[in-house]
Amino acid sequence: MEIVVIGLNHRTASVELRERMSFNKEQAGELSEEILAHGLMHEVLVLSTCNRTELYGVPDRWTGSRTDVLENFLMSYQKLQPENVNGSLYRHIDRDAVRHIYRVASGLDSMMLGEAEILGQVRAAYTNAYKLGVTGRVLNRLFQSAIEVGKRVRTDTGIGVRPMSVAFAGVKLAEKLLTSLKDRRGLILGAGVTSERVLRHLCDRGMQQIRILNRNTERANALATRYGGEVLPWKDLGKSLEWADLVVASVASSEPVLTRAMLEKSMAKRKKQTLMLMDLGVPRNVDPSVGELKNVRLYNIDGLKEVVLQNLKAREKEIPRAEAIVEEHIQNFSRWQAGVSACSILRDLQAGSQIDRDTFLRKHLDAMSNYSDQELAYVMELLQKFLNSSNPENSADPHDEAEMWNKVRALSAFCTHFGDNLGRN
Image (cartoon, rainbow, N blue to C red):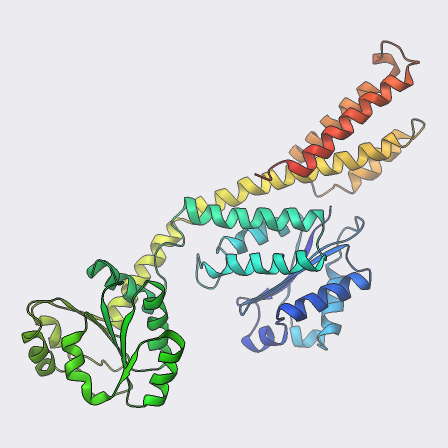
């Protein structure tokens, strides 16, 4: 039942090292199969994203730790020397390993607190490993419960509700101001990375009427191909201002591309219709005095950054609630581990009535040295039921060995059911 994890992430490793340690879906499968083929682990799973690469393993017997074996193999597999890694790897065993994957799936260990994408990445990594057959009972249970924890944290807390990027914060503000984006018109000025992020969020929120204006029409056409929308020449900017409900400006320009005179002219033809302007340019793309015009709502990048900062503080307040959910599920998983361990011991005890029980139990309890006092007490409670049932002094008929083993089989069946099903729902 030992679980080991080695990995690196955005906190411990540079972008260059993370790139060298990254695995796509096929490569993750090949690495997993190599680890199993060399007999290093009994179960294995590779989780690799742009910000982390982690190997989860379950050895076929208790060893006290097998992280060193995984580390050495990974270094050799990727043709890296210890100095290349330079202390970037972290290591977790058993309860700490469970806590780690639960926090990862919940977005508590992400570069952006509460990010939603990581839960899908955890699910995809597990699905891939499961289909390859490189996981088993332990990692299957671990990752099923991790996905459950991640979903519950997002449902029961607000840690992932508030937007954490300037682009998304602006889109959420637009959605609130304009009530809905589905029937609204969006005008994108610029075709760079920031414009693409905003465009992606607008499409995700249901906006369908989009125009893209950029001095380089080739880049604008590329965005329109990916996300839809109509590309217009830059000279049509004035007319498009009359058409739009939302204007997003992210253009490389030393002077404002939207002046007060331009907006006064377009607003005069809009018949009091509200216009939202999102200025994401540095230097600013919109003359600040435009915000003084009636029915114009202007938001610049500094204001949106302040919104993001407030959202971060709000998310951080949700951390204790999220951590409490994580700890609750760790207890559930630990009880499942304890049940499986007790079942294993009982099956071995059932193999023969002449076994030296004290020696046998001491060996197994040594292998569970990582368990908490509560978990050990639970295991011992199950075992004590067995010992009492098989103790001649407590038996109505000390010679009725068949009756004794019937009790053992019943208890073993109970432990098997307990170990396989506790906490699954």
